[in-house]
Image 1 (spheres, one colour):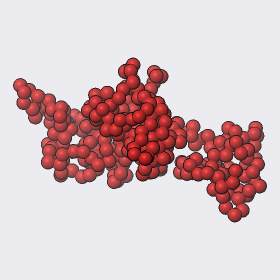
Image 2 (cartoon, helix red, strand yellow; image 1 turned 90 degrees about the vertical axis):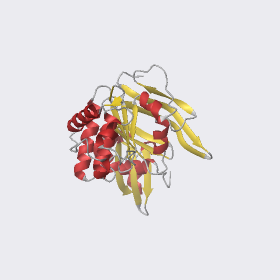
Image 3 (cartoon, helix red, strand yellow; image 1 turned 90 degrees about the horizontal axis):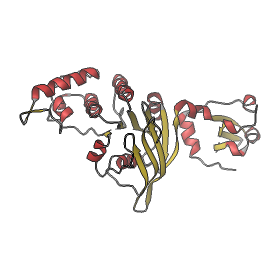
Image 4 (tube, one colour; image 1 turned 180 degrees about the vertical axis):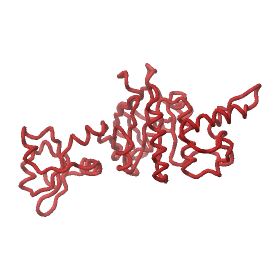
Length: 302
């Protein structure tokens, strides 16, 4: 495994009865990066989270973590946590009848002479919240906090648990713009720590593109792409033109097309064009949604 890699998945497949949920997925997460993995409902995102966190076992493939020479197999979320993978799900898993501090340290409360050291727990919680710019008293009951603050508390707890990989499922869902900016700041702070990385599972492409360094796309259990954001956008060209104009582009460069009566729109790989051809075309810069849509769209006529 490369020195700058924190998590590496190779050839991961998962089947349910009559359904191929994940098909030979290869995925690499590097230190210091925020990586967004996108896909519609049913694409396999939830299954991949559950494979990583030990909720589901996988049929084939390997998972490696930095600092561990052997492949890991997580049999439970607790084992995943021990291996350095911490997860915050879209449905916040906190206890509304406990204080903010109790939620931050639940299951790992500081103790003194066998008893919970409430003073130390509140002090440590206050310092953690202050360092993350979350403005809420540690002694406040969680059910008195807004949904956005509860989400921040869940992320803060995960950040404080010495994880190498922080997995966040739809982390900005339901958040206002100001809260989304705070969440992004938390992700960046975590990723900047030595040897750590953030993996976001998201549906909204605009937010994924704005937040992340790298992008990946799951479609029907298959990983369609996974690469650095700017490299991905430079790879493809997009042309809306007549059939005659489209046919000038070598078929070997075609990656997806939407036909109309008089022509169509074509996504193609620019590196496969003949030398000098790109300068002669009236190209558009494809959006991330264009790329995702056309890479999964078969041409009407080949």
